[in-house]
Length: 504
Image (cartoon, rainbow, N blue to C red; front, side):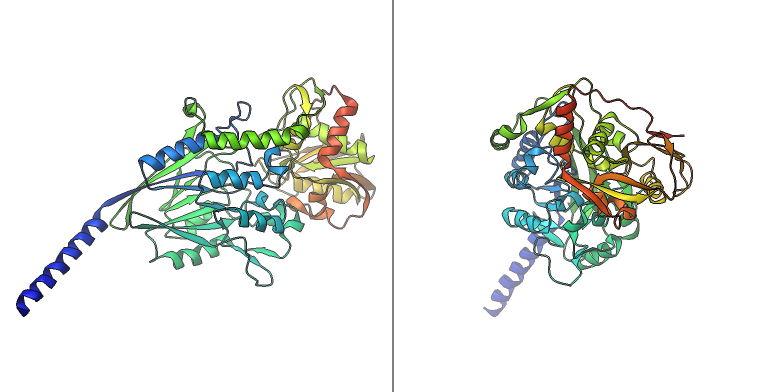
């Protein structure tokens, strides 16, 4: 009898071990959908080329029904940028992403634009975590609105997702929005987090807002090069389109452009706890032509827009030409929209010069009527305009800084009024500016000039530290309000480019 009991126990053990081995040995397929730098462009848009969240939701829901193991990640810069979000300080985006069952979002620099208190409110109202492992407080206190990482399980496969936010956030949002925060070295942080996750999970994913721009001190490519053990980096910030991803060592880096123009996805196969296959792809707007919009997302977006329409639909003037605010243009050269904005600033504040950062101009405007909503979309950050007084030497230093990253499409590139200058983009940064004229006269190093700018740049935003100590001689209202007033007073407008900035 004792022998019989022992045999049954032994056979049971063998059976359990066999079943366990069978489960572990089975291949598990996981799909990870991803977006980045949507900047609240949640609607399909012919002009911007956006797919929109309603069609994306349809595709993701279908995959969840048919595949089962589906994750949806957002690599940041989501809560700010368009009227649909700015009027309600990001709440609309939180609601929409909740309805899409996003699994996690990493914080982008522009997600801080409403300030830390609002970011905490957004975290509390959202049913998904905000990730940023390299974000800490100077005083060592816990940050309530973020996590370092999450772990999700799919058919026994554990996937760890950790977040990294660009240290450029310290100057790529208004400095007051990040007071008391420290953005630690993302490479050092990634090493520590990967070491912590190793042994706990089968797949490690970095959800990062670092980008791959050569103008950045830290990039996702650097993380992949220096931190072993990361299987996939879902990235944002530099707005690149990586159609099939980019392999760096053993790490796949993916990015889906900008403005919901693409829906990215990565297919992973895990066999017995080991990642055996990884493939990346992007779904284009053209490929979604026959995809039906998700009813729930469409309904929510329509309701939000109707509520905002009373404000945004009011006409402020007419333009006879298209006003060029395209990202690649305002960050590398003079545009007619940049000229209009800076002309409006200089007229309002009655200054010698006006300068604004190209990164603060977020959209173009079609020829025809201009609505309040369009102007808010162009200038979505709620910046105020002010006049400062600086020497010609500091003004020249500002221009040197402004073109220091050229030809990279960096937000610090200027749009100007009252000033013309030439620069050599092939020269060493710091020695690029050649000639400068203010109101037709050559710049004088010791002369004092009045300069209209925005509060972001005055606070040292985009690295304009030469403005921080300059005395404020006059202040005006919101930048978007100033531009609306200028358009209304000068309508119809037809600004042109006129050689204010010349790359030699």
